[in-house]
Length: 165
Image (cartoon, rainbow, N blue to C red; front, side, top):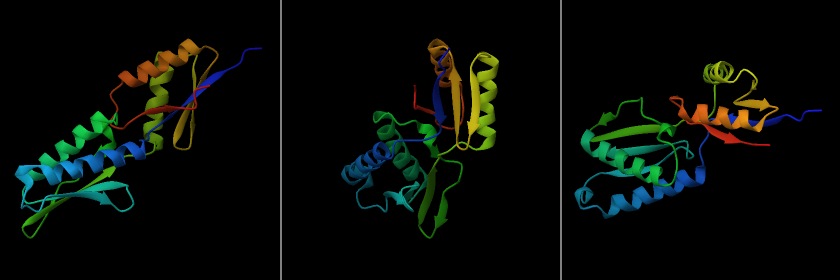
């Protein structure tokens, strides 16, 4: 009797690490000489589901975003978490940029993952379960191979692996 091994593929991020990265970026923003006396600000937006950047110019917003991205990378958080598709909004003499955090797999993203798994590892079974994909196989080596294939694939959303058993 063969026992199946499995793990879950999810699109998620560690809230604590993101919070720490934003806090570090806020502290650096207060320390940097090029932001002294300006309207530059970085804060969480509506319940830690994103960040709100404020500045006087687009270059200032880009510098704040670059600072935040460097802090995220140092804390091991994928930059694919940031949804920078919206453009900054000009309001008076300030610009605001709302950047949401990407979380969860919709059906289209889950189908991309399952198709890739079926193409590379036909013996591994991939099932869509809500906002996650459960991958199971009789061989742990196949599961390790699936993880490596998914890490090397270029998706526009972050991937994380959970419940490896």
